[in-house]
Length: 241
Image (cartoon, rainbow, N blue to C red; front, side, top):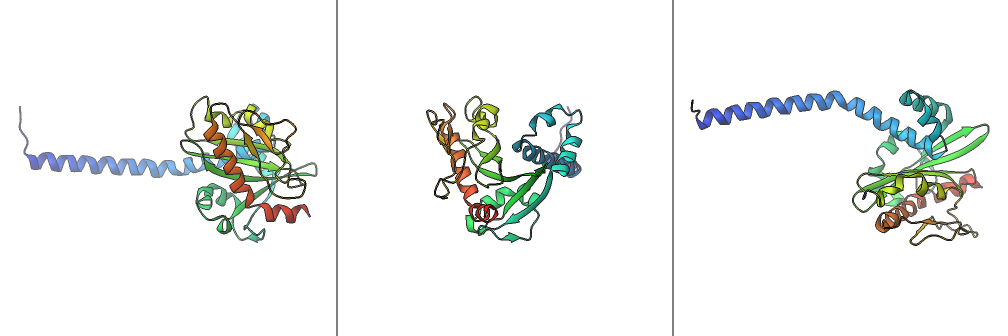
């Protein structure tokens, strides 16, 4: 058997590692635009789902094209506000794509994107939310009626919550009860939404059922809503005036 010197083995290994690294970098560069497009379509789909367009999206033969078309048709306006409710110069979709960066800031320093859905004279206001579950990030979109208080719909998702437990935040049975709940009390104070372990009182306008066995994820979602939605309070009050 032919013997190779240590120098030969080292140089050969170095060359191979370099070639593999260059190839991986090339592939990653080529795939990046496609990955970015898929991410954008996923977020557009979730925004549409939050205003009740889930069934139509699911029925479409070419979902990507349908989502882009529907988003352009129904999301008629978008803008970004600061903590004090003033509009700022920024692209709402770009801020949404990088929402993690904003959530990591103090609430008073964040940018808050808003998307307006309009159909037959009816308007819904959609905002993104992001927080922490048990094992990783959780996120979603909440749409509001024009009173800027009543939830029209909500969708949530996660990266690595426990299957059958915390992962249930992305299911219809958990998300649907948010519809009709309100984030301000009768005196106009912000109270957000409480995710109640053991089940919420159906008459409670601010409470929904927590996930049995998924307490930490449920509380993480509750904290996410309180943290993110509180940043919109000043803007919501201005719009509702």
